[in-house]
Image: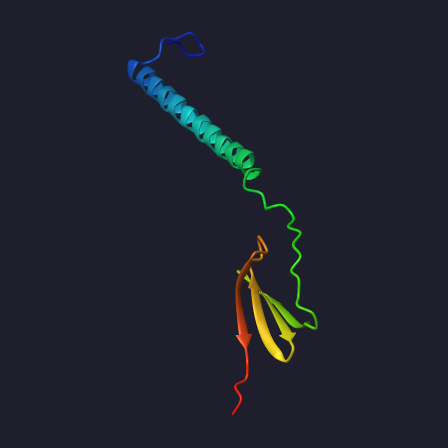
Length: 113
């Protein structure tokens, strides 16, 4: 190796410069691989995000018996509860909020003394 003024470099200095160049090449390669990996992960997540989108709109009709009256509704993270009064008897109906499929029914009746 030659210095800028065309004098030969000391062998120790030439070895140090070669070592620094090797380290720089390794660091630059690792940096480019890390950036490429981050971009790859972002692209993968964006590509597969379309497949995991929310379900389409559900249009469901739940028929009530004649004379029934809806008293209240409540929405939770994992269920929807509708309170209905049917001829003096209170009934709770639960539904899945994602699919609107019925999950259960609870009738609250009073016993005659």
